[in-house]
Amino acid sequence: MNAHRGWRRDTREPAVALPPLSCDCAVHVFDPARVDLLLPGRRYEPPVAWLDELRTLHERLGVQRAVLVQPSVYGNDHAVLLTALRADPARYRGVALLDDSVSDAACEELHAAGVRSARFNILSRFGAAFDAVAFRRQVRRAEALGWIISLHATADELAAHARLLLDLRAEVVVDHLAYLNPGDLDGEGFRFLREAVTRGHWWVKVSRVDHRFAPPYDDAVELIRRVVALNPWRMLWATDWPHPLYDAATTTMPNDADLVELFARAVPDAALREQILARNPARVFGFPDA
Image (cartoon, rainbow, N blue to C red):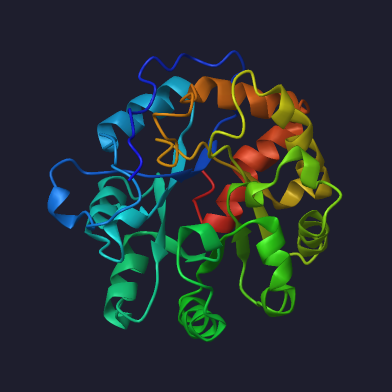
């Protein structure tokens, strides 16, 4: 189990102001009162990161909306996610984990609370081998609710399942830049993303998730710039707060203001930043216009 030393509570105000209605499209919350829901054998020990901490962070950054992603340490018990979504239904949307253990009635409850996506893990180092039959079955359930399909995978893993994935009819969001490295920009995975974002219903979430990049993130600027250039109208942005995949023993925990500034360096055009930070997530996740 990875140790987690907690998110940076010294997060400062970023040097660049975010546009109104900016949305952080991937955060996780952990309720310290519901340790009973944590799975045994979980991959990491969650930090204290409940709604008051999330609000503090976002006020400091200038973020007004957020998408709350079900943490894997709770498995398919969405009680914490439901509580968080119901606390501020105008400001938050949710991403659930979906398998046969989640009933249709539970899905309806999740939808009513603001869940708009189901997340599927293809990332081989984080779980069992990808089951295409089970995936198709759960995608049909998500489609019936009008939910987005969120894919957690490397770009190469997405490319390996290109025939299946490019046939999806629902809106599709690729998490965490598909774990691209700067050296991957001429590879098959990057070519897959280039094809996917021309389809009109695929989106890529720009976020930093692990120790591959460290402050001041100079090596990430060109990578983000190249990905965004594929189609800025199909990009989303996220912090992945409170950075649960960071290992305290090996990693420098990011200051989230640095991540805001990294995005501004990679996307210097203010109009494009507003498109990615505010307009795109409002469209994808169904936030109100104002």
